[in-house]
Image (cartoon, rainbow, N blue to C red; front, side, top):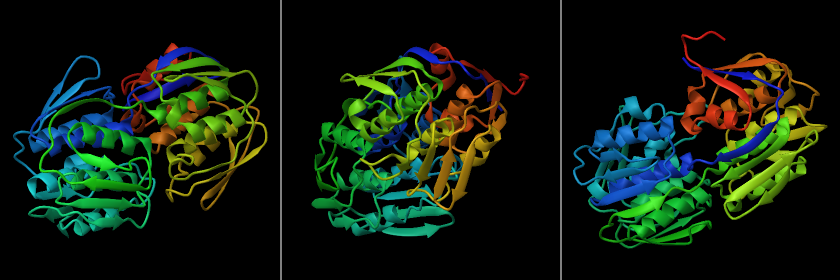
Length: 422
């Protein structure tokens, strides 16, 4: 099992290209099921979760072709299965996103209840209730969501909570439904907008994406399209947290700063000097960071996917920070590992009190989930001595060659395979 070895204490300098967004790519890949025509996608990041999604689509009968660079071509003209098996779904919660497209186009779907990072319950009940509102007959049988419908019909759906994948799933189901669907309390995340823009290119009639009220007028069929996946705002934010912690001067290319308002604002409060262009971010840090309070919230609030990285930054900041997690009930699992590196953190329920220390010290730590992995990398880059991060398969789910990109910025970091010794 691979792990990372980091020799900390070196500032970051240089330029790196931001990958396409994992959280946009996964639903966009699933949208290929909505048409028999060809979908050509660019900027599809090379990640474990993307690989799993492509394997799942191939299992359903989608023809998948990887082109040069980060290009993927998909054609679902010969789908011969509507079952998403447990073996593929168990590692990735986003697999539930095939439910809406399969039900909308083929009138049936069997999707295993999903897995993924152990950061909270993240139930799929909002997906199920929404599909039922659209006329789907839904049952849970032997660990599978079993759905049937002759043709979905438009409805007004107000979810009990803001759910990104729920909004995406229901939007994909509604584009082929008969009549008009209104999604109230919809997620406003940029990744939802990116999916909507692709669907519109495919012939869908959607308005209101980017707001909490999305209106979809169903059409008879969708056609093929070409689309480039948006830049990953979480990857970009993770690199910015890294330079804020270590010091240095970096430039992020192919970024989307207009999607990162809350993250950039908090980083500036921490003392990071930021200048932005349309698709690039330049960041300079020449002082010890200042402690910054954060409270996670749905977009445009502070992203839960950036909480762990900011906690790592706060561990070496001047002052005390209060970190409140409101989205997932079990997203402080990185705390104990940061403490192993010398962090001073106290947790009470959904709140963590982080008292900044002058120095962290290298140690062997274990990644517990995707964003926790990134927080340990950031802490390891700052810590004195050597840090070994185990179970980095979590990191590979959402970051494309993170150690390579950090190496380009001057970090002393390398991947060790199971046969290597630290």
